[in-house]
Length: 229
Image (tube, rainbow, N blue to C red; front, side, top):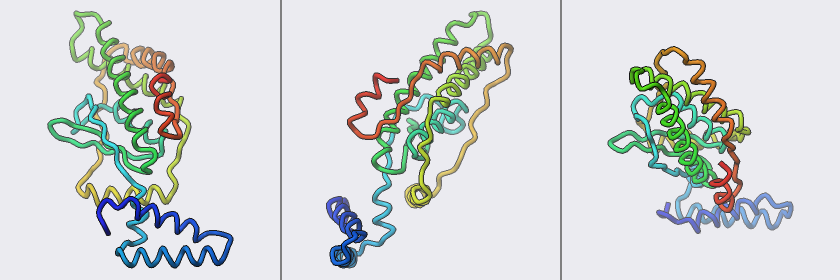
């Protein structure tokens, strides 16, 4: 298949859409033209379908990529559900997170991740600063993690399901296998034990309730997203 030939792929998609026309003559002609183009350029049905899958990478990742805290994975899950996409953490010296799926939604998912993740990290830092200076750092970290878990739990209640279709899930899985064949999974790091853990989670939940997550439906909605969160 020709490299980066977006125009050809779009033309094929339009022809295949016309092939479903109620007009038999128009449908047959469109299908015939699509088949000829696919044969001429050696394009398969799978390649055509995969052209709708893309990845948008965010370079904002404020946690370890090998064993990140569970609250960060929880926030990733929220973004996946909100936009009907999947995510992958790219490890290395400067970790990043990629959102892959329907190419019309991945960029907005990446943008929303950056907005919410920055808010979460800032809220957690501010909460830790409020702790008694005499408290051990491990206790502060544990309370901060519990606060963040509560914050994420509250934000989750704002999410409306944007479920991926079965076809989208299958295409996303195929795309992942082809582009990142060695990728794995992580369950994340649990928050440490500390006194007042439930209180920290409750305070985080109350603060997280102030967050409003919208589901933009087009690129034009991105401007609204920044002020709405």
